[in-house]
Amino acid sequence: MRLIVGLGNPGAKYNFTRHNFGFLALDFYFKVNNLKWESSPKFGAIWAKTKIRDEDVIFIKPQGFYNESGRVVHEFMHYYKIAAQDILVICDNFDLEFGKIRYRAAGQAAGNNGLKSIDIVLGSGDYPRLRLGTGNDELRKKLGDIDFVLSRFTEDEKGRLPEILRTVSDKIAEII
Image 1 (tube, rainbow, N blue to C red):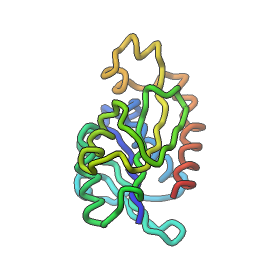
Image 2: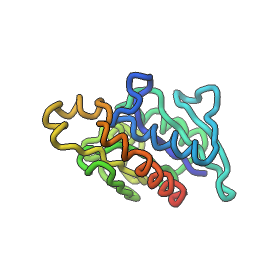
Image 3: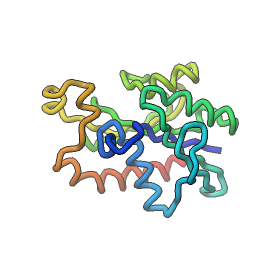
Image 4: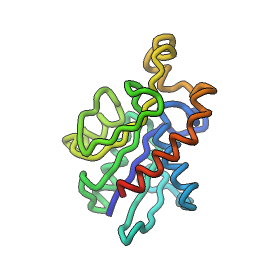
């Protein structure tokens, strides 16, 4: 069994913000693959379970705040007995150039508070992650880190999102 986690913040005010790139990636994957989210939340997450190539796969979008994602990930892992190496966390990364995608089988949180939260409950960073670049040095300097991650994509960036999300969707399929 696999667990695919998209990180983001709940609520309409966070839609299309940089910090919600993980949610956006899963929503795009669901649209492309004609998948549907369950109608009732489980363990504090929007979720869905499906079979892909004879393997059960659970997708979640934690509905607590980004920095508290670890609790929800832990609940799903414990309930479904999923090993750390069988999860994939999809998150934003402002240190990566916008549109760059980086996969690692394990690693450090590197300042990402959602990953830090998951590291704490798992006791390590030994789980796969897919980092989606949101870097825009000029805007980040102007806004500061906190306001930057909560800012919406620029018009130019929005125009590039479909291509980036297609690539991310292909990468999710490849990893699964």
